[in-house]
Image (cartoon, rainbow, N blue to C red; front, side, top):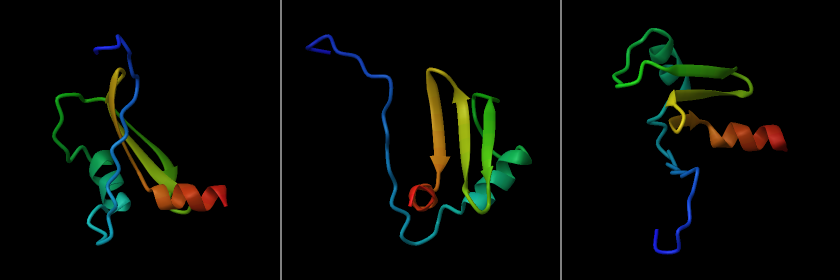
Length: 76
């Protein structure tokens, strides 16, 4: 703010070394509307093999959850 700069994205990473965030469970719960949110907007992309991405909210505020390890595996 002091330099009158702006940013359009903020990434927060969680290293889930214990397997607490199961993407299959997140996708299933989302598809069955078993989540709480002020925004009813969500989108699910992907599959089990390539990895899932779940987006919650609308621009400019979107929360995206995905499996970074699977993303990196796809890139080789």
